Image 1 (cartoon, helix red, strand yellow):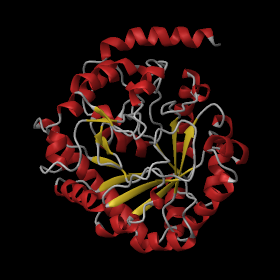
Image 2 (spheres, helix red, strand yellow; image 1 turned 90 degrees about the vertical axis):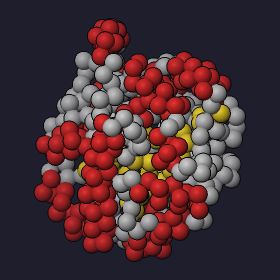
Image 3 (spheres, helix red, strand yellow; image 1 turned 180 degrees about the horizontal axis):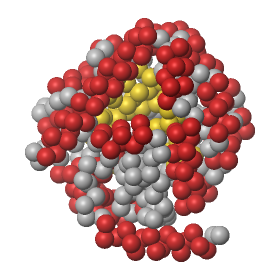
Length: 417
């Protein structure tokens, strides 16, 4: 698997893109995590990675989207550059760029060009990526497009609220591959697409199309118009994990996941503290789907000191980690409401209905399924996670709940056999 992946990546990706990935993301990313771990030992805090939503506006209308896609909020570039610069001083080099649709932000390239020593992963539907846009990304070399595909022709149109979505997205994907970009495909797996896209045939098609990495994650029924019928069952969540660990050991395509450690134990990046989120309005939020905040990036102390001293973020991490290794929004929306009220956190949505949306969520299983852990099979993923992506000791107090939770889960699975 690994030699074939390296061979086809070296042959297909632009040398500058490869170098920026290896240096800015690879080496600097490892250093960033090591600095994060040292800060934790000193009782200090600042995440190793930041996710930055730079715009709300989007050309699609996806089911379960939590973003105010009809709003025109776009992050102030000067403020964002101060955030990135402040984070760089503390060892950060990797940033996720989200939306809405990031390529609709008129100054996206201004942001990328201002920080050539950083690496950016751009979460995009790909429809605004023309050959000219892809070529500009190639010249910079410090960004990888992660293009979301939610199904083939029929399912994509249904999931994303527009016509001809699949074909338009593939055109953007082809432009990225032809330009020599390191290119990924992300899929929010749900009941309507899991049988089509969680397959070896689909991964082999991505390989034929020149895609270098894939990212599967579970659909979260949140936002103003969640579709609870699309939510995954515990059996399907286990199926995803088993498929990913098996495919990573056999196929020449990298597969990302952010919700398990090397032993297959569930984790939440927000709870572990390795990542937090900045909204298009500059609000500092626990994660993209938790749209509540106390602080914002305009604090004159800078983003590092603001996050370091935030009791809201600290309480959110610790409360979540005490009760679940999974997604606190899906499993314990009551805890989210409690901590929002405790800190008087503001609703950061334009629509102003985030609390009502929490009330509408029916608690369900997420990635924490005790007794169903699937360890990594491939040595590379196992080693990388063991040293640079694990729970960082966040879940010391959650173990007492695991046995009871496992019994309840086994009962659920037994009733569905």
